[in-house]
Amino acid sequence: MFLIEYSQHFSQRTKIIKDTTEQNKILTWLDNVKQYGLFKYPKLAIPGKLVPSWAGLNPTDSNFTYAQQNNLWHYHVGHEAYQQGLGDYLTSNWVVHFIWDKRNPNSCFKIKLVDYTPHKVLNKFPIPQDFKFK
Image (cartoon, rainbow, N blue to C red; front, side, top):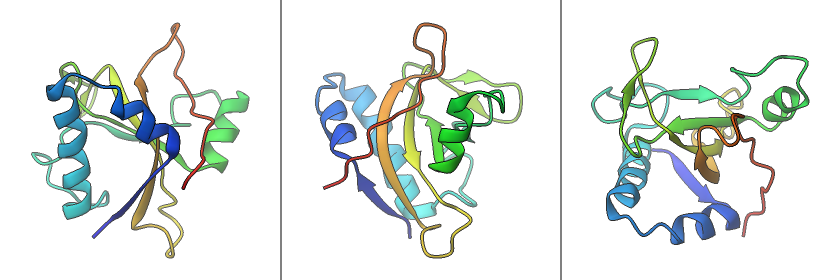
């Protein structure tokens, strides 16, 4: 079973979502993560793309190093709708950002939610900076 911790920013960000369909997509993903984890989950349970946030960045970009050092990942939650990605996964315009140190045996079964944003803001992938936890 996966443990999920919420940053103050993530909690505030998701409280302002008024669309119940959007809220349900986030909650469904979180329920599936708790039940199945992130290593080997059923595709039907969690159909969106799960990716390290540094993967699409140039290695010379300071955000690449920042995202990698902070173990930042993101999941395409399906809001507003899923689109077929290049591979065997689905993408969406909105993503949940989280910290996941999957290489560390002490923390590989835990994620820390840090933000919920559009996949692109002003044509750039947003890298969350606020990691304050209660």
